[in-house]
Image 1 (cartoon, rainbow, N blue to C red):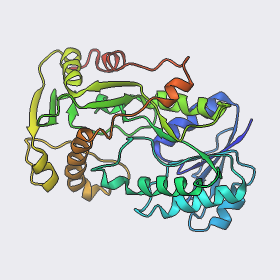
Image 2 (image 1 turned 90 degrees about the horizontal axis):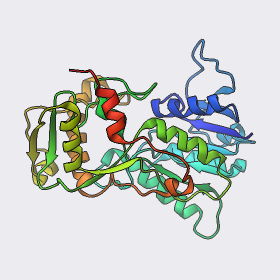
Image 3 (image 1 turned 90 degrees about the vertical axis):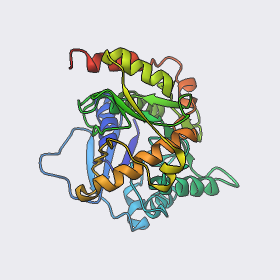
Length: 315
């Protein structure tokens, strides 16, 4: 048994992982939050701790005796909070650290992930001369769960629309990008892999790719049409128009992530959709398979199986 600290533990991906860790009853969990514990939130094996992320000294005190830190912090472009957390982890003698990744491998065109690039740089620099902190970048690609929108397909992940709309049988695609590839992983598989990674006795790989399945855009559209029983209406968008922000389509996916203020959802949705389509063309969502190889007995959920079940019997 070890103690695991989870920073940003009230977030929906964090909650999926906490559920798996709690069910395993192997470890003690410290849930770090800027807020006081909400009433009635007590869970056996989980201790809620109010943390001041601007104070590395206080964080280091909290992290005394912690073996592994999992971060789900959405940070400023300079990754100020996460750097404080890393410094505190080193000071407290933490063995393992997972920075706030949980998505793409590449970051090109994904401006809202600037803090991830800075965290990666900071950790690499930290270990430049000798290993100070063991860490891995958990990268599962795009959550397959998003393709069940508007229907919920996990306990906690907020289901958002994507450019691949299985519900209304339509898609926004980059012109000429049919052969670009995307790694899809269910959030359930991510949570199970993270739980196994905590128990893994070998050294964590720096790049921690998790590949549930990888598909080309062409294969994804064919699967969508097979599962939904009708052709998709596809609109092709030009790269230069996406880059300039001048693109037009008959619809725009609504990306109402909890971190986006409601009044800014429409504006950010257009920015994020353009960034996603360009990032796919830059292979940012094609992830490696380090954790697949380190955990060869784990069987990942495949897209056709998962989506057929999710869409079965739905109009």
